[in-house]
Length: 341
Length: 204
Image (cartoon, each protein chain N blue to C red):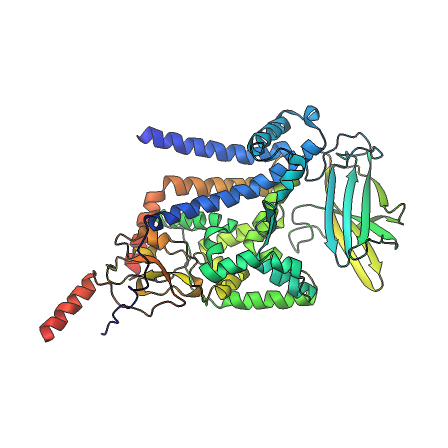
Protein backbone atom coordinates (compact mmCIF):
# COMPACT_ATOMS: atom_id res chain seq x y z
CA UNK A 1 0.00 0.00 0.00
CA UNK A 2 1.31 3.43 -0.84
CA UNK A 3 0.42 6.57 0.98
CA UNK A 4 0.56 10.04 -0.46
CA UNK A 5 2.31 12.46 1.78
CA UNK A 6 0.29 15.55 2.49
CA UNK A 7 1.18 18.73 0.68
CA UNK A 8 -1.70 20.54 2.29
CA UNK A 9 0.03 21.89 5.34
CA UNK A 10 1.29 24.99 3.57
CA UNK A 11 -2.24 26.01 2.67
CA UNK A 12 -3.84 25.13 6.00
CA UNK A 13 -4.86 28.10 8.07
CA UNK A 14 -3.72 28.05 11.67
CA UNK A 15 -6.82 26.72 13.37
CA UNK A 16 -8.59 29.43 15.36
CA UNK A 17 -10.24 28.52 18.64
CA UNK A 18 -13.70 29.29 17.24
CA UNK A 19 -13.53 26.42 14.69
CA UNK A 20 -14.22 23.84 17.37
CA UNK A 21 -17.34 25.76 18.41
CA UNK A 22 -18.69 26.55 14.96
CA UNK A 23 -21.15 23.69 15.19
CA UNK A 24 -22.72 25.29 18.25
CA UNK A 25 -22.84 28.62 16.42
CA UNK A 26 -24.54 26.81 13.57
CA UNK A 27 -27.23 25.42 15.88
CA UNK A 28 -27.82 28.91 17.24
CA UNK A 29 -28.08 30.13 13.66
CA UNK A 30 -30.58 27.40 12.70
CA UNK A 31 -32.66 28.08 15.80
CA UNK A 32 -32.69 31.81 15.11
CA UNK A 33 -33.81 31.29 11.52
CA UNK A 34 -36.60 29.00 12.70
CA UNK A 35 -37.70 31.48 15.35
CA UNK A 36 -37.59 34.28 12.77
CA UNK A 37 -40.06 32.31 10.64
CA UNK A 38 -42.41 32.24 13.62
CA UNK A 39 -41.71 35.82 14.63
CA UNK A 40 -42.24 37.49 11.23
CA UNK A 41 -45.96 36.62 10.92
CA UNK A 42 -46.49 37.55 14.58
CA UNK A 43 -44.85 40.91 13.93
CA UNK A 44 -47.06 41.24 10.84
CA UNK A 45 -50.18 40.80 12.97
CA UNK A 46 -48.86 43.30 15.51
CA UNK A 47 -48.17 45.73 12.67
CA UNK A 48 -51.77 45.49 11.55
CA UNK A 49 -53.06 45.96 15.08
CA UNK A 50 -50.95 49.12 15.26
CA UNK A 51 -52.14 50.45 11.90
CA UNK A 52 -55.78 49.79 12.87
CA UNK A 53 -55.23 51.40 16.31
CA UNK A 54 -56.96 48.33 17.62
CA UNK A 55 -55.43 47.89 21.05
CA UNK A 56 -58.56 48.69 23.07
CA UNK A 57 -60.59 46.23 21.00
CA UNK A 58 -58.26 43.30 21.53
CA UNK A 59 -59.05 40.44 23.87
CA UNK A 60 -56.65 39.05 26.49
CA UNK A 61 -54.45 36.80 24.37
CA UNK A 62 -54.33 39.33 21.54
CA UNK A 63 -53.24 42.02 23.97
CA UNK A 64 -50.53 39.66 25.18
CA UNK A 65 -49.36 39.24 21.59
CA UNK A 66 -49.47 43.00 21.03
CA UNK A 67 -47.52 43.73 24.23
CA UNK A 68 -44.86 41.07 23.63
CA UNK A 69 -44.30 42.12 20.01
CA UNK A 70 -44.20 45.74 21.12
CA UNK A 71 -41.57 44.89 23.74
CA UNK A 72 -39.52 43.00 21.14
CA UNK A 73 -39.66 45.60 18.40
CA UNK A 74 -39.75 48.89 20.28
CA UNK A 75 -35.97 49.08 20.88
CA UNK A 76 -35.45 48.94 17.11
CA UNK A 77 -38.32 50.94 15.70
CA UNK A 78 -40.18 54.15 16.42
CA UNK A 79 -42.82 53.61 13.75
CA UNK A 80 -43.78 49.92 13.66
CA UNK A 81 -46.58 50.48 11.14
CA UNK A 82 -44.02 51.30 8.46
CA UNK A 83 -40.67 50.16 9.80
CA UNK A 84 -41.69 46.54 10.28
CA UNK A 85 -42.11 46.25 6.52
CA UNK A 86 -38.34 45.77 6.54
CA UNK A 87 -38.84 42.27 7.92
CA UNK A 88 -41.10 40.17 5.71
CA UNK A 89 -41.36 36.84 3.96
CA UNK A 90 -39.59 33.54 4.49
CA UNK A 91 -36.28 31.95 3.54
CA UNK A 92 -37.79 31.25 0.11
CA UNK A 93 -38.02 34.94 -0.62
CA UNK A 94 -38.11 37.75 1.85
CA UNK A 95 -36.89 41.06 3.10
CA UNK A 96 -34.33 41.16 5.87
CA UNK A 97 -33.86 44.63 7.34
CA UNK A 98 -34.79 46.13 4.01
CA UNK A 99 -32.53 43.85 1.97
CA UNK A 100 -34.45 41.67 -0.47
CA UNK A 101 -33.09 38.12 -0.54
CA UNK A 102 -34.35 35.21 -2.59
CA UNK A 103 -33.44 31.54 -2.65
CA UNK A 104 -31.61 30.76 -5.92
CA UNK A 105 -34.01 27.87 -6.50
CA UNK A 106 -36.91 30.35 -6.51
CA UNK A 107 -35.10 32.32 -9.17
CA UNK A 108 -34.45 29.23 -11.29
CA UNK A 109 -38.11 28.24 -10.84
CA UNK A 110 -39.34 31.70 -11.81
CA UNK A 111 -37.11 31.85 -14.86
CA UNK A 112 -38.24 28.46 -16.10
CA UNK A 113 -41.92 29.11 -15.38
CA UNK A 114 -41.92 32.56 -16.95
CA UNK A 115 -39.39 31.80 -19.68
CA UNK A 116 -37.78 35.16 -19.08
CA UNK A 117 -35.10 36.66 -16.89
CA UNK A 118 -36.54 39.32 -14.61
CA UNK A 119 -33.36 41.05 -13.49
CA UNK A 120 -34.65 42.88 -10.40
CA UNK A 121 -35.71 39.48 -9.04
CA UNK A 122 -32.52 37.73 -10.12
CA UNK A 123 -30.45 40.36 -8.30
CA UNK A 124 -32.18 39.47 -5.02
CA UNK A 125 -30.48 36.09 -5.29
CA UNK A 126 -27.02 37.53 -5.76
CA UNK A 127 -25.97 37.37 -2.10
CA UNK A 128 -26.96 33.70 -1.59
CA UNK A 129 -25.39 32.74 -4.92
CA UNK A 130 -22.08 34.46 -4.10
CA UNK A 131 -22.02 33.01 -0.59
CA UNK A 132 -22.67 29.54 -2.00
CA UNK A 133 -19.89 29.92 -4.54
CA UNK A 134 -17.55 30.72 -1.64
CA UNK A 135 -18.81 28.44 1.10
CA UNK A 136 -20.51 25.67 -0.87
CA UNK A 137 -23.75 24.13 0.29
CA UNK A 138 -23.66 26.14 3.52
CA UNK A 139 -27.35 27.11 3.22
CA UNK A 140 -28.30 23.48 3.87
CA UNK A 141 -26.28 23.33 7.06
CA UNK A 142 -26.62 26.82 8.46
CA UNK A 143 -29.85 28.44 7.26
CA UNK A 144 -32.37 25.87 6.01
CA UNK A 145 -35.28 25.71 8.48
CA UNK A 146 -35.88 22.12 7.45
CA UNK A 147 -32.35 21.13 8.50
CA UNK A 148 -33.22 22.15 12.04
CA UNK A 149 -35.94 19.49 12.12
CA UNK A 150 -34.16 16.96 9.91
CA UNK A 151 -31.14 16.81 12.21
CA UNK A 152 -33.33 16.38 15.28
CA UNK A 153 -35.16 13.72 13.30
CA UNK A 154 -32.05 11.75 12.37
CA UNK A 155 -31.01 11.70 16.05
CA UNK A 156 -34.53 10.61 16.87
CA UNK A 157 -34.19 7.76 14.36
CA UNK A 158 -31.02 6.60 16.10
CA UNK A 159 -32.84 6.58 19.41
CA UNK A 160 -35.71 4.61 17.85
CA UNK A 161 -33.20 2.07 16.59
CA UNK A 162 -31.69 1.86 20.05
CA UNK A 163 -35.06 0.95 21.53
CA UNK A 164 -35.64 -1.69 18.88
CA UNK A 165 -37.72 0.10 16.23
CA UNK A 166 -36.79 -0.60 12.62
CA UNK A 167 -35.10 2.31 10.87
CA UNK A 168 -33.83 2.40 7.30
CA UNK A 169 -30.44 3.37 5.98
CA UNK A 170 -30.71 2.57 2.31
CA UNK A 171 -28.23 4.08 -0.08
CA UNK A 172 -29.30 5.57 -3.39
CA UNK A 173 -27.50 7.35 -6.15
CA UNK A 174 -26.78 10.93 -5.09
CA UNK A 175 -27.30 12.07 -8.67
CA UNK A 176 -31.06 11.51 -8.34
CA UNK A 177 -31.45 14.99 -6.90
CA UNK A 178 -29.87 16.55 -9.99
CA UNK A 179 -32.40 14.68 -12.09
CA UNK A 180 -35.17 16.03 -9.87
CA UNK A 181 -33.79 19.55 -10.33
CA UNK A 182 -33.82 19.07 -14.08
CA UNK A 183 -37.32 17.56 -14.10
CA UNK A 184 -38.54 20.41 -11.89
CA UNK A 185 -37.20 22.95 -14.36
CA UNK A 186 -38.84 21.15 -17.28
CA UNK A 187 -42.15 20.78 -15.40
CA UNK A 188 -42.09 24.48 -14.44
CA UNK A 189 -41.49 25.42 -18.06
CA UNK A 190 -44.36 23.27 -19.29
CA UNK A 191 -46.90 24.18 -16.61
CA UNK A 192 -45.91 27.81 -16.05
CA UNK A 193 -45.92 27.29 -12.27
CA UNK A 194 -42.99 27.15 -9.89
CA UNK A 195 -43.13 23.44 -9.05
CA UNK A 196 -40.20 23.68 -6.62
CA UNK A 197 -42.24 25.74 -4.18
CA UNK A 198 -44.34 22.64 -3.48
CA UNK A 199 -41.56 20.13 -2.93
CA UNK A 200 -38.70 22.10 -1.49
CA UNK A 201 -38.83 21.66 2.30
CA UNK A 202 -37.58 25.13 3.37
CA UNK A 203 -40.16 26.78 1.10
CA UNK A 204 -42.87 24.47 2.39
CA UNK A 205 -41.96 25.03 6.05
CA UNK A 206 -41.78 28.81 5.70
CA UNK A 207 -45.17 28.88 4.02
CA UNK A 208 -46.80 26.48 6.47
CA UNK A 209 -45.61 28.39 9.52
CA UNK A 210 -46.88 31.58 7.93
CA UNK A 211 -50.25 30.01 7.17
CA UNK A 212 -50.60 28.40 10.57
CA UNK A 213 -50.21 31.77 12.28
CA UNK A 214 -51.94 33.94 9.72
CA UNK A 215 -54.75 31.64 8.68
CA UNK A 216 -54.93 29.42 11.76
CA UNK A 217 -54.29 26.15 10.02
CA UNK A 218 -51.66 23.97 8.45
CA UNK A 219 -52.06 22.77 4.90
CA UNK A 220 -51.03 19.87 2.71
CA UNK A 221 -47.43 21.10 2.77
CA UNK A 222 -47.16 20.04 6.40
CA UNK A 223 -48.22 16.53 5.48
CA UNK A 224 -45.63 16.50 2.71
CA UNK A 225 -42.95 17.59 5.15
CA UNK A 226 -43.97 14.98 7.70
CA UNK A 227 -43.75 12.38 4.92
CA UNK A 228 -40.15 13.46 4.27
CA UNK A 229 -39.40 13.01 7.99
CA UNK A 230 -40.83 9.49 7.85
CA UNK A 231 -38.80 8.82 4.69
CA UNK A 232 -35.66 9.83 6.57
CA UNK A 233 -36.51 7.55 9.50
CA UNK A 234 -37.72 4.45 7.74
CA UNK A 235 -36.03 4.53 4.33
CA UNK A 236 -32.78 6.46 4.30
CA UNK A 237 -30.93 8.60 6.84
CA UNK A 238 -31.22 12.25 5.73
CA UNK A 239 -32.47 10.70 2.50
CA UNK A 240 -34.44 13.69 1.30
CA UNK A 241 -31.51 16.12 1.55
CA UNK A 242 -29.01 13.65 0.16
CA UNK A 243 -30.98 12.17 -2.70
CA UNK A 244 -34.10 14.17 -3.47
CA UNK A 245 -33.79 17.86 -2.60
CA UNK A 246 -33.68 20.04 -5.76
CA UNK A 247 -32.35 22.96 -3.71
CA UNK A 248 -29.54 20.78 -2.38
CA UNK A 249 -28.71 19.85 -5.96
CA UNK A 250 -28.55 23.48 -7.05
CA UNK A 251 -26.43 24.50 -4.07
CA UNK A 252 -24.08 21.55 -4.63
CA UNK A 253 -23.57 22.61 -8.23
CA UNK A 254 -23.02 26.26 -7.33
CA UNK A 255 -20.57 25.34 -4.59
CA UNK A 256 -18.63 22.72 -6.48
CA UNK A 257 -15.54 24.91 -6.78
CA UNK A 258 -15.92 26.70 -3.46
CA UNK A 259 -12.60 28.10 -2.23
CA UNK A 260 -13.46 27.62 1.44
CA UNK A 261 -13.65 23.95 2.33
CA UNK A 262 -12.91 21.52 5.12
CA UNK A 263 -9.77 19.43 4.84
CA UNK A 264 -8.15 16.71 6.91
CA UNK A 265 -4.69 17.26 8.38
CA UNK A 266 -3.29 13.78 7.91
CA UNK A 267 -0.33 14.47 10.22
CA UNK A 268 -2.55 14.73 13.30
CA UNK A 269 -5.40 12.42 12.30
CA UNK A 270 -5.69 9.21 14.31
CA UNK A 271 -8.46 7.57 12.23
CA UNK A 272 -10.88 7.49 15.15
CA UNK A 273 -13.82 7.69 12.70
CA UNK A 274 -15.73 10.15 14.82
CA UNK A 275 -15.93 12.57 11.87
CA UNK A 276 -17.58 9.90 9.72
CA UNK A 277 -19.95 9.03 12.53
CA UNK A 278 -21.32 12.55 12.90
CA UNK A 279 -21.46 13.43 9.21
CA UNK A 280 -25.18 13.85 8.49
CA UNK A 281 -24.67 13.38 4.77
CA UNK A 282 -22.71 10.14 5.28
CA UNK A 283 -19.60 11.53 3.62
CA UNK A 284 -16.19 10.15 4.46
CA UNK A 285 -14.07 12.95 5.94
CA UNK A 286 -11.65 10.41 7.37
CA UNK A 287 -10.66 9.50 3.82
CA UNK A 288 -10.82 13.07 2.48
CA UNK A 289 -14.09 12.49 0.66
CA UNK A 290 -16.05 15.73 1.09
CA UNK A 291 -16.99 16.58 -2.48
CA UNK A 292 -19.64 19.06 -3.51
CA UNK A 293 -22.14 17.53 -1.08
CA UNK A 294 -20.39 18.84 2.05
CA UNK A 295 -22.46 21.60 3.60
CA UNK A 296 -19.67 22.91 5.84
CA UNK A 297 -21.76 22.12 8.91
CA UNK A 298 -18.50 21.70 10.91
CA UNK A 299 -19.87 18.79 12.97
CA UNK A 300 -16.74 16.83 11.99
CA UNK A 301 -14.47 19.66 13.11
CA UNK A 302 -16.25 19.91 16.44
CA UNK A 303 -16.02 16.21 17.21
CA UNK A 304 -12.39 15.62 16.16
CA UNK A 305 -10.29 14.93 19.27
CA UNK A 306 -7.04 15.59 17.37
CA UNK A 307 -8.03 18.90 15.78
CA UNK A 308 -7.26 17.18 12.50
CA UNK A 309 -10.02 18.87 10.51
CA UNK A 310 -9.90 22.50 9.56
CA UNK A 311 -10.91 25.00 6.94
CA UNK A 312 -8.55 25.62 4.06
CA UNK A 313 -8.51 27.81 0.98
CA UNK A 314 -8.51 25.40 -1.93
CA UNK A 315 -10.57 24.89 -5.07
CA UNK A 316 -10.68 21.12 -4.74
CA UNK A 317 -10.44 18.37 -2.17
CA UNK A 318 -7.25 16.40 -1.69
CA UNK A 319 -7.14 12.84 -2.94
CA UNK A 320 -7.28 10.18 -0.26
CA UNK A 321 -4.21 10.83 1.89
CA UNK A 322 -4.36 7.41 3.48
CA UNK A 323 -4.42 6.60 7.19
CA UNK A 324 -3.76 9.40 9.63
CA UNK A 325 -0.16 9.53 10.83
CA UNK A 326 -1.30 9.09 14.43
CA UNK A 327 -3.33 5.99 13.64
CA UNK A 328 -2.39 2.43 14.57
CA UNK A 329 -2.62 1.37 10.91
CA UNK A 330 -0.08 4.00 9.81
CA UNK A 331 2.29 3.14 12.64
CA UNK A 332 2.19 -0.60 11.92
CA UNK A 333 2.76 0.07 8.21
CA UNK A 334 5.74 2.28 9.07
CA UNK A 335 7.16 -0.47 11.28
CA UNK A 336 6.77 -2.94 8.42
CA UNK A 337 8.61 -0.61 6.06
CA UNK A 338 11.43 -0.15 8.55
CA UNK A 339 11.69 -3.92 9.00
CA UNK A 340 11.78 -4.44 5.23
CA UNK A 341 14.72 -2.04 4.96
CA UNK B 1 -27.12 18.97 39.68
CA UNK B 2 -29.50 16.44 38.21
CA UNK B 3 -32.60 18.33 39.42
CA UNK B 4 -31.25 21.50 37.77
CA UNK B 5 -30.96 19.66 34.49
CA UNK B 6 -34.48 18.29 34.75
CA UNK B 7 -35.72 21.77 35.67
CA UNK B 8 -34.04 23.28 32.60
CA UNK B 9 -35.56 20.65 30.31
CA UNK B 10 -38.96 21.24 31.91
CA UNK B 11 -38.72 24.99 31.30
CA UNK B 12 -37.74 24.38 27.66
CA UNK B 13 -40.68 22.05 27.14
CA UNK B 14 -42.98 24.57 28.79
CA UNK B 15 -41.76 27.30 26.40
CA UNK B 16 -42.39 25.02 23.45
CA UNK B 17 -45.89 24.24 24.69
CA UNK B 18 -46.76 27.92 24.99
CA UNK B 19 -45.35 28.61 21.56
CA UNK B 20 -47.62 25.99 20.05
CA UNK B 21 -50.61 26.85 22.21
CA UNK B 22 -50.34 30.55 21.36
CA UNK B 23 -51.45 29.79 17.80
CA UNK B 24 -54.96 29.15 19.00
CA UNK B 25 -55.29 32.67 20.35
CA UNK B 26 -54.64 34.05 16.87
CA UNK B 27 -57.27 31.92 15.30
CA UNK B 28 -59.40 34.68 13.83
CA UNK B 29 -56.64 37.11 13.01
CA UNK B 30 -54.98 37.09 9.70
CA UNK B 31 -52.24 38.93 7.96
CA UNK B 32 -54.33 41.65 6.59
CA UNK B 33 -55.79 44.62 8.28
CA UNK B 34 -57.84 43.48 11.25
CA UNK B 35 -61.22 45.02 11.39
CA UNK B 36 -63.91 45.27 13.98
CA UNK B 37 -66.74 46.20 11.65
CA UNK B 38 -70.12 44.63 12.13
CA UNK B 39 -71.37 44.11 8.62
CA UNK B 40 -70.24 43.70 5.03
CA UNK B 41 -70.96 47.32 4.08
CA UNK B 42 -68.92 48.83 6.84
CA UNK B 43 -66.21 51.14 5.67
CA UNK B 44 -63.68 50.04 8.25
CA UNK B 45 -60.60 48.16 7.04
CA UNK B 46 -61.20 44.61 5.85
CA UNK B 47 -60.23 41.59 7.86
CA UNK B 48 -57.93 40.28 5.21
CA UNK B 49 -56.20 41.68 2.19
CA UNK B 50 -54.24 39.32 0.00
CA UNK B 51 -52.18 40.66 -2.84
CA UNK B 52 -50.86 38.45 -5.56
CA UNK B 53 -49.65 38.44 -9.13
CA UNK B 54 -50.94 36.16 -11.85
CA UNK B 55 -49.74 36.43 -15.43
CA UNK B 56 -50.00 40.07 -16.45
CA UNK B 57 -52.27 41.03 -13.57
CA UNK B 58 -51.96 42.26 -10.03
CA UNK B 59 -54.84 41.03 -7.87
CA UNK B 60 -56.00 42.22 -4.45
CA UNK B 61 -58.62 40.28 -2.53
CA UNK B 62 -60.52 41.59 0.49
CA UNK B 63 -63.25 40.23 2.70
CA UNK B 64 -65.97 42.16 4.52
CA UNK B 65 -66.91 42.11 7.34
CA UNK B 66 -63.92 41.44 9.52
CA UNK B 67 -65.09 38.04 10.69
CA UNK B 68 -67.78 36.57 8.47
CA UNK B 69 -70.28 34.56 10.50
CA UNK B 70 -72.65 31.76 9.43
CA UNK B 71 -75.99 32.98 8.07
CA UNK B 72 -74.81 36.58 7.95
CA UNK B 73 -74.09 38.37 4.67
CA UNK B 74 -70.50 39.00 3.65
CA UNK B 75 -68.74 40.42 0.62
CA UNK B 76 -65.59 39.78 -1.38
CA UNK B 77 -63.94 42.69 -3.11
CA UNK B 78 -61.54 41.96 -5.92
CA UNK B 79 -59.26 44.49 -7.56
CA UNK B 80 -57.54 43.38 -10.78
CA UNK B 81 -55.13 45.66 -12.60
CA UNK B 82 -52.53 45.09 -15.29
CA UNK B 83 -48.98 45.07 -13.95
CA UNK B 84 -47.53 47.08 -16.84
CA UNK B 85 -49.90 50.04 -17.12
CA UNK B 86 -52.20 49.74 -14.09
CA UNK B 87 -55.35 49.57 -16.23
CA UNK B 88 -58.34 47.90 -14.61
CA UNK B 89 -59.59 44.53 -15.88
CA UNK B 90 -62.81 45.06 -17.80
CA UNK B 91 -64.02 41.50 -18.47
CA UNK B 92 -66.49 39.83 -16.06
CA UNK B 93 -65.13 37.70 -13.21
CA UNK B 94 -66.85 34.48 -12.10
CA UNK B 95 -66.76 33.56 -8.42
CA UNK B 96 -66.91 29.99 -7.18
CA UNK B 97 -66.79 28.46 -3.72
CA UNK B 98 -65.14 25.19 -2.67
CA UNK B 99 -64.87 23.39 0.65
CA UNK B 100 -61.39 23.64 2.10
CA UNK B 101 -61.35 20.40 4.07
CA UNK B 102 -58.46 18.15 4.92
CA UNK B 103 -57.80 15.78 2.01
CA UNK B 104 -60.62 17.24 -0.08
CA UNK B 105 -59.90 16.54 -3.70
CA UNK B 106 -57.37 13.81 -2.88
CA UNK B 107 -57.98 10.55 -4.68
CA UNK B 108 -59.36 7.83 -2.35
CA UNK B 109 -58.90 9.92 0.80
CA UNK B 110 -61.23 12.87 0.40
CA UNK B 111 -64.48 13.95 -1.20
CA UNK B 112 -64.18 15.27 -4.75
CA UNK B 113 -64.00 19.04 -4.96
CA UNK B 114 -67.03 20.46 -6.73
CA UNK B 115 -66.83 24.23 -7.23
CA UNK B 116 -70.19 25.95 -6.81
CA UNK B 117 -70.72 29.11 -8.79
CA UNK B 118 -71.85 31.99 -6.61
CA UNK B 119 -71.99 34.70 -9.21
CA UNK B 120 -70.54 36.57 -12.17
CA UNK B 121 -69.62 40.18 -11.55
CA UNK B 122 -68.76 43.09 -13.80
CA UNK B 123 -66.36 45.75 -12.71
CA UNK B 124 -67.96 48.57 -10.76
CA UNK B 125 -65.85 51.58 -9.90
CA UNK B 126 -62.69 49.47 -10.32
CA UNK B 127 -63.95 46.68 -8.02
CA UNK B 128 -65.54 43.28 -8.59
CA UNK B 129 -67.94 42.82 -5.64
CA UNK B 130 -69.38 39.43 -4.81
CA UNK B 131 -71.77 38.98 -1.91
CA UNK B 132 -72.18 35.71 -0.02
CA UNK B 133 -74.07 34.09 2.83
CA UNK B 134 -72.77 30.84 4.27
CA UNK B 135 -75.08 28.81 6.47
CA UNK B 136 -72.36 26.65 7.96
CA UNK B 137 -69.21 27.49 9.82
CA UNK B 138 -66.04 26.31 8.07
CA UNK B 139 -63.05 26.90 5.89
CA UNK B 140 -63.83 27.68 2.27
CA UNK B 141 -61.94 28.61 -0.86
CA UNK B 142 -63.19 31.44 -3.04
CA UNK B 143 -62.13 30.97 -6.63
CA UNK B 144 -62.04 33.90 -9.02
CA UNK B 145 -62.02 33.04 -12.72
CA UNK B 146 -61.71 35.26 -15.76
CA UNK B 147 -60.50 35.04 -19.32
CA UNK B 148 -58.48 37.63 -21.20
CA UNK B 149 -58.15 36.82 -24.88
CA UNK B 150 -57.71 33.06 -24.90
CA UNK B 151 -55.85 33.03 -21.62
CA UNK B 152 -57.80 31.67 -18.59
CA UNK B 153 -56.94 33.00 -15.12
CA UNK B 154 -57.96 31.12 -11.97
CA UNK B 155 -57.05 32.25 -8.46
CA UNK B 156 -57.97 30.63 -5.13
CA UNK B 157 -58.31 32.60 -1.91
CA UNK B 158 -59.07 31.33 1.59
CA UNK B 159 -62.22 32.29 3.48
CA UNK B 160 -62.94 31.41 7.09
CA UNK B 161 -66.58 31.62 8.14
CA UNK B 162 -67.13 31.55 11.89
CA UNK B 163 -64.39 30.71 14.33
CA UNK B 164 -61.64 28.41 13.14
CA UNK B 165 -60.85 25.39 15.34
CA UNK B 166 -58.04 26.23 17.74
CA UNK B 167 -55.77 23.38 16.68
CA UNK B 168 -56.55 21.20 13.70
CA UNK B 169 -55.51 17.56 13.34
CA UNK B 170 -52.36 18.45 11.38
CA UNK B 171 -51.37 21.12 13.88
CA UNK B 172 -51.84 18.67 16.73
CA UNK B 173 -49.76 16.02 14.97
CA UNK B 174 -47.02 18.47 14.13
CA UNK B 175 -46.92 19.88 17.66
CA UNK B 176 -46.65 16.38 19.05
CA UNK B 177 -43.90 15.50 16.60
CA UNK B 178 -41.81 18.58 17.37
CA UNK B 179 -42.28 18.04 21.09
CA UNK B 180 -41.10 14.45 20.69
CA UNK B 181 -38.10 15.40 18.53
CA UNK B 182 -36.92 18.14 20.86
CA UNK B 183 -37.42 16.17 24.07
CA UNK B 184 -35.71 13.01 22.77
CA UNK B 185 -32.79 15.08 21.46
CA UNK B 186 -32.40 16.87 24.77
CA UNK B 187 -32.88 13.94 27.12
CA UNK B 188 -31.06 11.29 25.09
CA UNK B 189 -28.31 13.38 23.52
CA UNK B 190 -25.38 11.54 25.10
CA UNK B 191 -26.79 8.12 24.31
CA UNK B 192 -27.45 9.26 20.72
CA UNK B 193 -23.85 10.49 20.34
CA UNK B 194 -22.53 7.15 21.67
CA UNK B 195 -24.79 5.25 19.27
CA UNK B 196 -23.39 7.20 16.33
CA UNK B 197 -19.81 6.27 17.19
CA UNK B 198 -20.73 2.64 17.86
CA UNK B 199 -22.61 2.41 14.58
CA UNK B 200 -19.61 3.77 12.68
CA UNK B 201 -17.25 1.33 14.44
CA UNK B 202 -19.53 -1.60 13.65
CA UNK B 203 -19.82 -0.65 10.01
CA UNK B 204 -16.06 -0.66 9.41
